[in-house]
Length: 196
Image 1 (cartoon, rainbow, N blue to C red):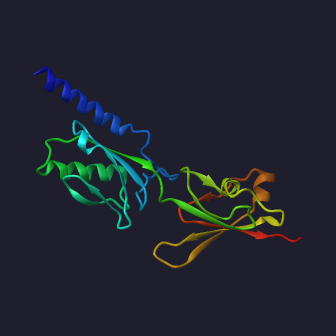
Image 2: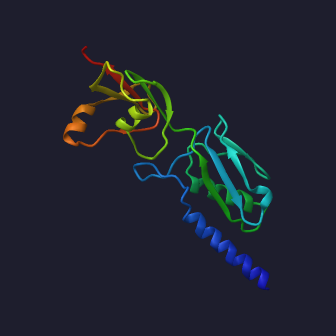
């Protein structure tokens, strides 16, 4: 009797910890992070040590999970994956499973920076809020011929092969204290050359 009581308490504690999971990712807009190809998930099932593991999202946006097989997780939030796993494990495999899902490693969010920076290329969006000035810093800073006032963000439009163009003047941001522009997933930052 006492063992069942303790297991119940542990299950409730695990559920509460899952809700308070500090590794649950949220975007700058307060929206829960959506899983993409290459992301690494840490999944745990209470009292089922054989199901504790990390899973990398494959190019077809699935993970291979024991007992269930292929599970589609692309563009889902961590809580949606948790609910889906719980439902499927309850369907003939486990009785009242307590599942926790955490983002172990973000590999799908990135941006690109080209032009007059010291190290152009592809970079991971390492935080929920990244600005143009932070992106330039990650790329090693501006070259001597860069224009601080001729920077553009090319933001891909949904389901189109076109971009929204956002002009950024870093020189004005520094001198006036205006807020810096935010970088989003798949943005392309272009730093143009200034007059010599």
